[in-house]
Structures are given as C-alpha cells and as structure tokens.
Amino acid sequence: MGGVLLAIGFVLLVRRWRSFAVEKRAAAVGLFVAALVYAGFGLFSGSIAWNLVELAGVAIYGAFAWLGLQRSGWFLVVGWTLHVAWDALLHDSSTTFVPSWYIGLCIGFDLALAGYIGFREIKK
Image 1 (spheres, rainbow, N blue to C red):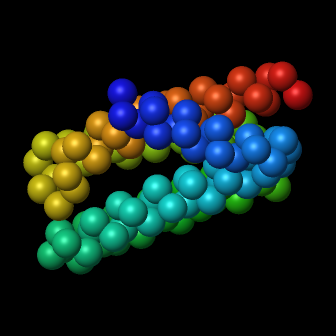
Image 2: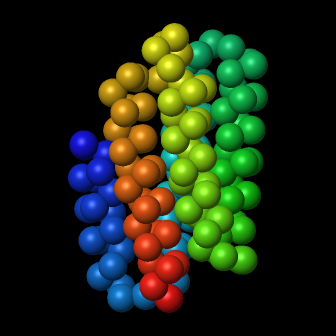
C-alpha cells in the first residue's frame, strides 16, 4: 500500500508539467534509479556475484528506460512490470542485504506506475 501511495505522489508531482513526455522521462529515470538502488544494496551483500547480478539489472532496466524514451512508452510499462519480478523473485526473504519492507514497497510502486503509464499510452 505504501508503494502505491508513493507512486501516486510521484505521478501527481510529474503531472504538474502537463506533458506526457515529461512524465515518461521521469518514469524512465525512475526505472533506472530503482535498479541503481538494488545495486547499492548489492554493495552490502559482500558478494561479487550479487554485485554483478545487480549491475546486470542496471543494464537491463536502463535499456528499458532508454527504449521507453526513444521508441515507445510501452517499454516503460514492460520495464516497470518486469521490475516486480526483480523485486519478488530475485530478492526474496533469503536476500538479507535488501530490507524486506523495501521489496514490498517497490512492488506496489512498480505496479502502480506501470499501470498509470499504460493508461496514458492507451489514451494518447
């Protein structure tokens, strides 16, 4: 629930510019930052393998962010939706270096933002 509320706040903030292009840019930057946060958590894992996995996530979600800006906002929808799998499947309760509260928060944010961007893509 907290993640959904944060996503609503994020959307309300970027909607102030009254431009879907600005909203997409903010969503793209946000997707990249979400991946960077996990890379930051990875530094606390003490594992080179985990750091490489998290850096791969930065590359993957960075690519979706770039494609979302260059090609279609649907890449942002897919990127944010796939990020839920990153949250839930890769960082389960055994991943001690990522706080469990953050995973739940991130899942709500990811799904709410993906839904909003998809809605905006349909409306345009």
